[in-house]
Amino acid sequence: MLTRVSRFGPTLPRLLSKPPARFVSQSKPTSGASSAAVTELHPAAEQAGHGEVSHYVKNPDYHGFSSDPVVDQWNMRVGFFFGISVALVIGGTFIHYLPDHGMRQWARREAERVIQQREKEGLPVIGENYYDPNKIVLTPAGEE
Image 1 (tube, rainbow, N blue to C red):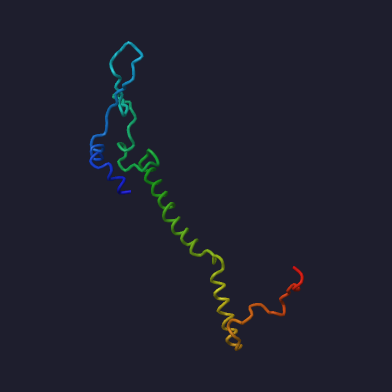
Image 2 (image 1 turned 180 degrees about the horizontal axis):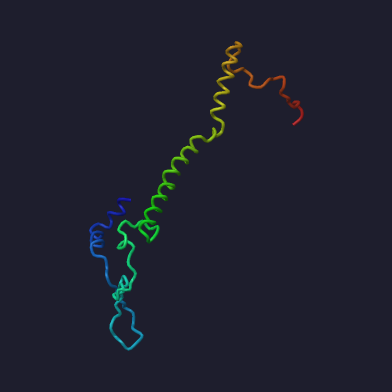
């Protein structure tokens, strides 16, 4: 990633220092006028005084919820309370108290209980035959 950024080298500061303000059209004019058309990058604001005022001018602490400053601040507080506090606390509690996935803890407790029972009875922890050989049904050697 750093090698890609370093390719821009000295051109990156020049690009960021002076952003273009105007574009000049180089296309052939369709009317009789022969001058190049100049367009603004950003449209000029209305100078008549009837233009729309930015929310940041009306309320420097604008959070984007409402144009009314009091409602905007309360909506921000309620949004952050429910979005962060409640979601993290209730979400974390829910995840913490989820049941044992795959019953791993239960399987370990059951294995420990069986080992203690077999040691108490004097049996080996693991028998030499996992299954009882008398209960295994094998097909005769001639049939397949």
